[in-house]
Length: 367
Image 1 (cartoon, rainbow, N blue to C red):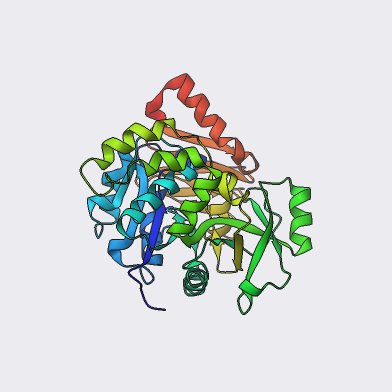
Image 2: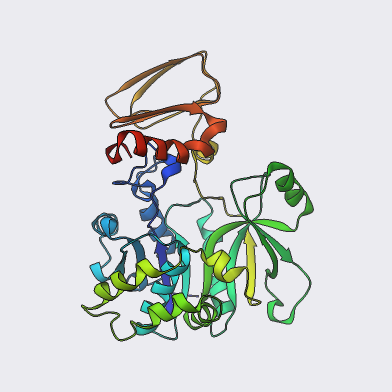
């Protein structure tokens, strides 16, 4: 399946990556960083991953208006009008509704892939094969497809999808299954049960559907959001688009596409795969993929590190700086500009709270 002029890719790049503070900050969030030391930012890697499937002119990036120039500097192939600027953050449902309406105004026959900007995929050829299969499955239909990941451990940081593997005529000859249930992040006991059952897969947050199909679903399950963006039908692709979006966006509910549509629609399917996926959403997930020394320590950031009697610890310091750590086990030590974080790796889910406390006590300049 070669590139099709009807295939579009929407990259969601509006997050601030607060769980990666202090490396990820408001002015330079995670999607624009080379956290893994590959020589490419996450958003650049995401663009290149979909480039064999999607014509350059059919990419859209949805991001905060304050990141528009950053996006264009990382993806110089895109025209400014391919970067859709959100005036406020309102989760994934409004983001997808906006992008789908924008695409429909240009090509109502289009199919679209929606992906976060900041995921790691090491098996790209297999991933591209699965996406191609998914595009063929949804084209010209109301089917909504999500990509599931075969779990390798009882992870509590991901949502889970339970599959219905019973034979169905519409999925015959494919590895696609009907979705039975979605479950948000479980506790470790429940996650262990999920993994052992063989029926549950990680929810990647990557979606494939026709533009017509997702618009019908939005109209059914999130009619107010759909109506808000439908009102700009004559403005998309014109100089009036941004003013229209700036006016309607703040009134939209802050709601995810999973909760707003995927958990409600009977047309939801999943294609599960194993292609080296991680959302690299936390320092812990980064640790899983980082190069580690004989003591299980991971050093990054370009600075110099001396570690004594230290095990299982992430130390990330900026180029031109030196860190000396002694007596640590399973810790995070992360420095960037005007901020330093030292905490147990097991406490990383609290980092968002720490960031809020820093903002409240000391001000925006530190986050």
